[in-house]
Amino acid sequence: MEKAKAFLELTQGESDRVSSLAFPPHRLGTECSFYEYYSLRGIRVDRIEPGQVFCTFKVPPRLTDREGKLASGAIANLVDEVGGAVVYVEGLPMNVSVDMSISFLSSAKAGRLLGAILLVRVAWEFEDMKDELEIIGRVLGQKGGYSGTSVLVKNKTTGELIADGRHSLFGKHASKM
Image (cartoon, rainbow, N blue to C red; front, side, top):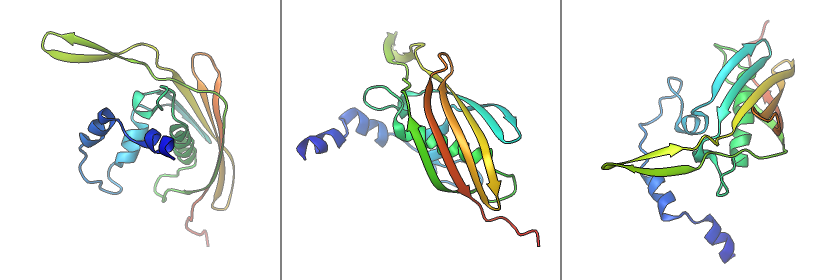
């Protein structure tokens, strides 16, 4: 029990970083939430086709575990967000997740921080070691308000499959009657 407690405790540096965050209150529907900003900042939509969305994302240190690998929760969030985005219809409410199934096949890493003191200020530079991910979301099918999507997360450089997710969503849309 003590080992688990020690593992979950924040270091002083981690605690200081969290304490220093300052975000204004979220205005629903007008801007992204802290959660969306924190987890999706840096994702780039490269191409949209009917029933498909293609994105790239460089693994940032804020979404890594203690080993410097992209956390499994961050991968699950990418599957959730991209899977929801591929079935989103402008002007209608967002669909809600019904079920997600993710196979974690490999890992991705972030760049290491290198500190360099330049005159009086400290500048942080990232090594060019960040893995860049290719995220492909596809609609598998739709029936009524139910949608099924597939999300592949791959290492863009090597083509290695990081995760394969299936995401089911439901949205209550206006009746055609």
